[in-house]
Length: 452
Image 1 (cartoon, rainbow, N blue to C red):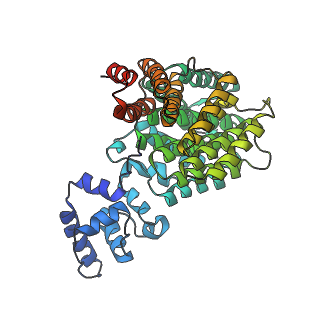
Image 2 (tube, helix red, strand yellow; image 1 turned 180 degrees about the vertical axis):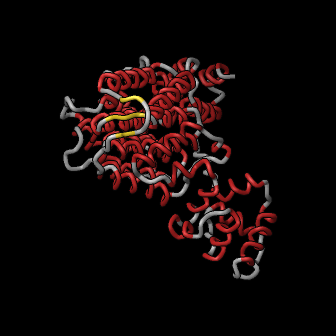
Image 3 (cartoon, rainbow, N blue to C red; image 1 turned 90 degrees about the horizontal axis):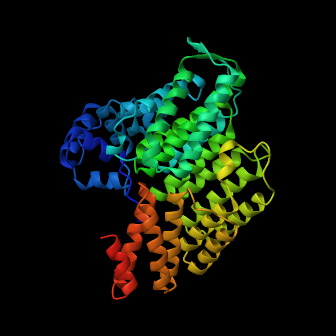
């Protein structure tokens, strides 16, 4: 499915104010004049060029925009274009502006727990520079030693913390067998439970680390499930909060995994090169032996997938070779609990999807077959199964084997009836569109009739 264009912050602001391009320019002109810059040339196409990224406004116009929307002038240079406009959305400020500290994390966590209506405008952050800035802040902050918490409230002891971690692990495994829509309410409630402890708990630094690590993983799961539900701004809000919690925990691994999931969202709906940059930040931060081969395999595979979206054939191949090599070193006692999902079959499925996007359906089918030989099991992973079956059908279709494509697509469609997930449903919709020109073939007609 073609990526949906990201809505610019300026377009979102105009929508919030219910202003046409001409009306917005009238207000901006008044602000421009009030700051002593004189009157503007008010050509309507200016706004569309700013919003589509064809041109950026000059510096006086940016200051006029900041003045118009009540944004501090210092943010114009600190956050750049169009990042400073994000500060016009009050609900976003705790997530984006809070210090990278335990207190800032608690503020961001509380804001994410309150929710919001950001999906009227799409992403919180749509520019690569702003995404890179968030990742850079995380990379610098995650080196800090976790601090004890001394908030008013109950004391969090090791036994209770262990029970909370077990609940989170159960939730993680439920994500393997339930649809995103089924699990999302439970995930958000688990997140709110942990956020309550982060705000109202006394504990030592070792328990503080565990609490913020658990909160980072809970927030990452909420981000993933919102993404699966096609709620992209809320997903990004949870991902950024997860990075903050990871930094407060001093846990680079859980933050690297969050960047891994942020990359999926970014190459699916945004700029693939931005996704590559996110994974590179994760890889750089866990370099030097601070993680396990299984986590390295995950990040190599995700980098390969992002590079395939960017059209980098050689880079993609290098990353998947590195992923296979890292995975061959086996499991370790200190593998993070969330790393269980990294399997040889999953790596090959990602390699197959990448080959398909790079125009090599034969290699894609070989990787999909290798995944099956590695005993990749879709049982209980229906969303992934539907997604990969759809891609396998697409590979058959690109090779001209329409009967095989229809047989695989039919299997995917039947499995999808038990799932309420945007990604596999979108993949099946795309597949139907690709098969439609072959409607003279009986197998195609029968498949298309199934979804009618």
